[in-house]
Length: 347
Ligand code: AN7
Image 1 (cartoon, protein in one colour):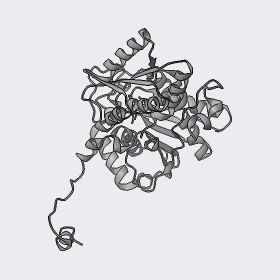
Image 2 (image 1 turned 120 degrees about the horizontal axis):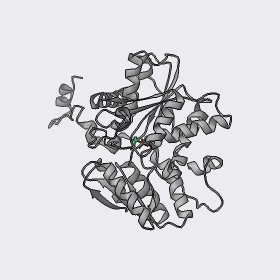
Image 3 (image 1 turned 60 degrees about the vertical axis):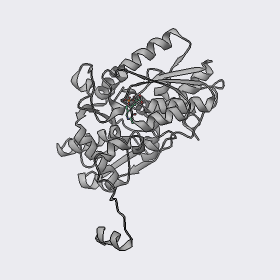
Image 4 (image 1 turned 90 degrees about the vertical axis):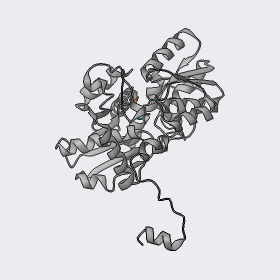
């Protein structure tokens, strides 16, 4: 079952909305076995969004946005992307038989995300500049031509993405105390906050979480309080200098009593390895940013040890293996038999 079927009553869909479904959503809320204990946190969970059909949380919003675009008669879909949005849009466009055009910042997106968009049959344009340049161009074109804008400025994207908050409440029986996630274009933090509030209002939870957003230090416009012209970070998914949902992010932060802070690339990569090494969860660098922030906040004594904390792992580590492989030992190259192998391995 996809998110439209599961949460239909909370979504802007009706009898005229076409059925679209890649079995997105229903991702596991994995309890931490090791990091939580090491940090002294009793209840730490990972929302494992890398298990969505195209490997990121984007599928939740895309399925709704594509269904609504089809309902409205669109035949051409377009987005700007740091990679995951384009992969997701291309998949749902392929499934429903409409054209997909994606504009990505040239040389700035992970190869595996690009391969997804190409394999699903999208027309891919690598535009010189940043994600923000690409989004400006896409916004202009979609306002002038009969082409549907599929970035998260499309409200149907956020409607679908809010279902992740519902799932967390359904799994825990209540909202967590803290919800940590990466912030790039800021759609997801906006969507989660909307989801938690709606579900609370519907009586499914007794409380609301504090929303904690992580940006990368070289791409932290919301933390800095102004747009960043040339965002820099190893976490290419969140290499964004002027988030479209800026206001949504700061409202989520302020209304929930949360915070948005920046972590360094070193902290991101070390959190990424720790997550893979000690939990068996391989997430892409952007997804490790909120874990890096959590580690810091715990050290600073800013998270109560008995709190229920959820870290959203927004995308699969398989999306961007290059970023990870720079930080692990390469394979041992060996020409030999079992005996030499045993010796090298010190068995
Ligand atoms: C893995 O694909 O912006 O703050 O164009 O791929 O809602 O933007 C991706 C963003 C976090 C940030 N984690 O979410 C795109 C794109 C992963 C991501 C984010 C993205 P938003």
